Amino acid sequence: MANPCTHLLLFGATGDLSKRMLLPSLFNLDADGLLPECLRIIATARSVHDTPEFVAIAAAALDQYVDADRRDPAKVQRFLDRIAYVPLDASEPAGFGALADAAGDKANLAIFLSTAPSLFGPTITGLSGSGLAGPGVRLALEKPLGSDLASSRAINDAVAAAYPEDRTFRIDHYLGKETVQNLLALRFGNALFEPLWNARGIDHVQITIAETVGLEGRAGYYDGMGALRDMVQNHMLQLLALVAMEPPAQFDPTSVRDEKVKVLRALRPIDRHSVEGCSVRGQYGAGAIEGQPVKGYAEELGKASQIETFVALKAHVDNWRWQGVPFYLRTGKRLPERSSEIIIRFKPVPHSMFGEASLKPNTLVISLQPDENVGLSMMAKAPGLDRDGLKLRSVPLDIGISNAFADVRRRIAYERLLLDLIEGKQTLFVRRDEVEAQWTWIDAIRAGWEATGMAPKPYAAGNWGPTAAIALTERDGVTWHD
Image 1 (cartoon, rainbow, N blue to C red):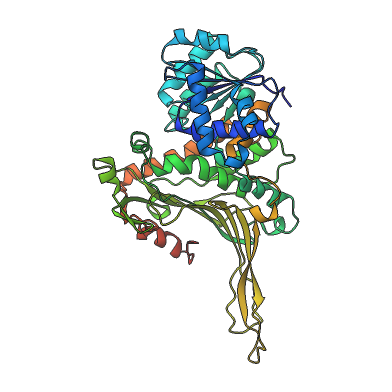
Image 2 (image 1 turned 120 degrees about the vertical axis):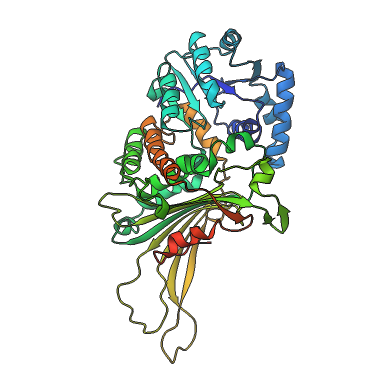
């Protein structure tokens, strides 16, 4: 393990991500005694504040986003005492000198960089020019890392010029979720599933990330990206890779990420010849969410747009383990409920001895949000005398994570990722070749949409996307798990 860092440089410290996730996560780690005693947090952003003013902002964020029973005054004060603030306009190279002066020991420095793609180049140049890119400095990058393969490569080239791959930590916060990591434990820590985890045992896989919200003040960013690039390119393809990967030799950065990138490179391209049969684009119109009327996307945006707020895909991993097994991916905004889940549908029994009894295939449901849960549906005998033959019913075997581990506090995903950054552990971060394999697949879909003139289909807010998304699976005799 690399030496824990002594200084953490937090870019975008006055932004929403920092207030909701980063500062609360760092506080929770500190409150549990997991941060190095010597760690100093240097916060920076364009906003002009001095340290006491920013400390007041941080204290307000803790009041709002940390549970009251966690906010012991002495622990809050100890955490706030770690913080210093240095204002910085990243487009002005001269400002990085003050940041370097505050950064302390540059041989044990971690930098968390959350910035607009247009500022990546100037920021990296400023960091490098001020001595903040030397040996021992780690750089964490929050998405978006480009908008296509070419722009992603340009960003990664700029980063690589100052920070080698073994000191670059690309963040996908889904990898910090307990249940995502539990997928690895489920697959590789139990003898029960792995013999069936292939085309002989699994009929199909579904991955859904559903949101009830609309633009939420992200109009400028979202209308330039859309659902495919905002959600599928990173979160959903990472989940697919974890479901489909071969068993790594060890739980270490090289072994795990080697296996993930093999899956991403084995994805069958969805191009102009297959895009209409394997993808659905949608855009929400006016409707209702939780009984309340909401505007359509164009009205919310204030102009007409051809960007998709919903996408459904039928993907295939062309290797021996998964040949012929479809992976159905679905994500969108203004859907009926907020949920993220992975559905593993096993193949039915080859012969039923129960006559007319309806047998349903076993289904493994891995819920990521809003509640973390692992459930397995099994066929069982319904109670009764059964004079006309056994009556069977599908019953769930649920492992409520919050119940099974009631004695362990549930952690924010960023707690795990920030701690791993501070300690120099890269396993749950994304490697460059993974990112580029993801963009290669996504770019082919976008090129297919453009070549075929495939426009988003309308759906009313509060529904599960366009009707074409239902047809995408039902052509194969599959129903979405709603």
